Length: 313
Image (cartoon, rainbow, N blue to C red):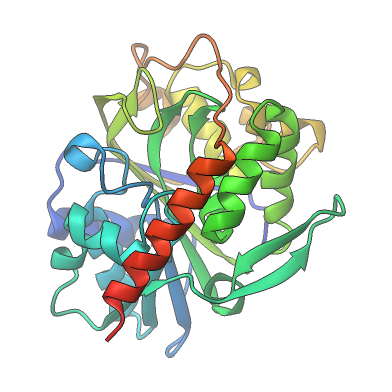
């Protein structure tokens, strides 16, 4: 993945209308000079945290996902969509949240991350990654802006955690739930092994207060994009009026002196952060560990297996 770019494209967008969002996506990608080759294998990676959350605020909005899918199809790409939900399967969450319906009629393959490839991260930790994410030509990251009780906020970098297969995601929470800095270090390591692509952020209605599941809606009214997710996180933290050092993920990026951590060095080809900034977005003041006990892990694994058996033809 390319994490050298410092360009961040920002646009105002206040409604979940697919056609309007599609026009914004085209403007974002044009401003970023992001192009797609005909026949490219594109994997869309939304946030499909869970189908059980009220109003599905925890997941990327169906209209946003559909608009992005249409844009890539218009470029001649072969599009698939998948994620590794904490509970259930990607197909099940897409069905429950309305994403499956929003994509109806489009030649988009909805997949579960059933196959994995073991990858060794720079820190020496081996991790089972979704093979679909590792083998695509372009990985399109589609996070939703949310507060997070363990990590302060979940933005562009955090959403790549969904490329880790489901059971191992729960294992990471169990092992590193009380060590947020180590958790963040492994998350940032993922950027070094994932393929190139782009991040397009659903910031139309965000989640604030608590998160990443049970927070309150916040009308942020923006869509954003960047090749470098670190630069995008820096810009979003600025827009949200939050101290970036409170984000353990951003702080890990700063400790590594990655491109995109300095707001003064970011390039904004469309709107500037000052024009769309807010001052009443609420992030957690005290961070709490998110962990999974062994019994809960086993129950979750069984339910995921049962759901996949049910989905099998």
